[in-house]
Amino acid sequence: MGFRGTLIGYIGMVGSILPCIALPARAASFHSQRIGYTLEVLPGWQQIPQDVVDSLAVKVQNPNSPHRMNYDAAFQAATGQGWFEYPYVIIQVVPYSDFGASRQINEDQFPTVLKALTGADINKAVDQQLSPQAKAMMSGLSIGQAELDTLNRRYRVPMSMSVAGIGQVHGQMTGYFGRKCLVQVTFYCRVADADQLATTSQLIADSFHFDADNAYSEAEAAAHPTNPSVLTGVGEKAIEGAVIAAGAGLLGLAFRGRKRQAK
Image (cartoon, rainbow, N blue to C red):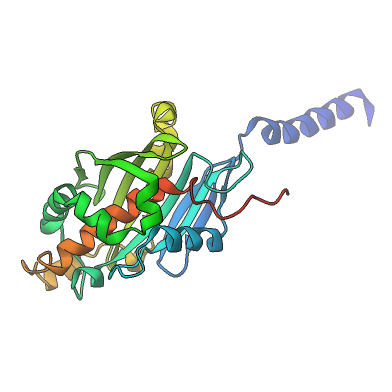
């Protein structure tokens, strides 16, 4: 083949190897068939087993509460020895039927939802929604200023609380308005790490999107104008429950189900 042919072959071989070395690890897509959305799981993160997630919901929820905590999935950085090691993310689903609504909440009602989120009676809701064990583990739950992102049909709400044996923890809740439900993507970490992990939190929240048939429908909004009564009574209680369920996610490490199995 000669020197020139050998050199060309060598260059081609190196060229095929270099992209494999240079490219960073890519995120993996998680798709919820049940709810109809996709979330990108960052490199170095993994899904928490659903039975562990369901166990958390059982432990923190008052069994007499009318609004069940619907945690569809959870993910965490692949470090540490147990599940729900900070930082982690919980995906919470709030069907519009919980609000007493038979169809989607329209855009002109988004500000009303946010007003109810920040105006919820947190102390009363905690007492009604959480188990005695959960209430004993937490103190000083604080809900920050809600921000509405109309362009992306979502809102952001910061929260914080003190967890017994752990200290101050932070949650950044990003809620998406879909056709059939709200989906809240909440990132949890220690308060001391919140600034350092802000970009990670944002990347995860921004990666969320509904499947086409579950995304907000402008056609449905036009066909079914807003019913002003949707967010009164039952609807307001559902919003309180959604906030408390997101806050209860901050207790994950305190209530973690079991140690992770080594891979």
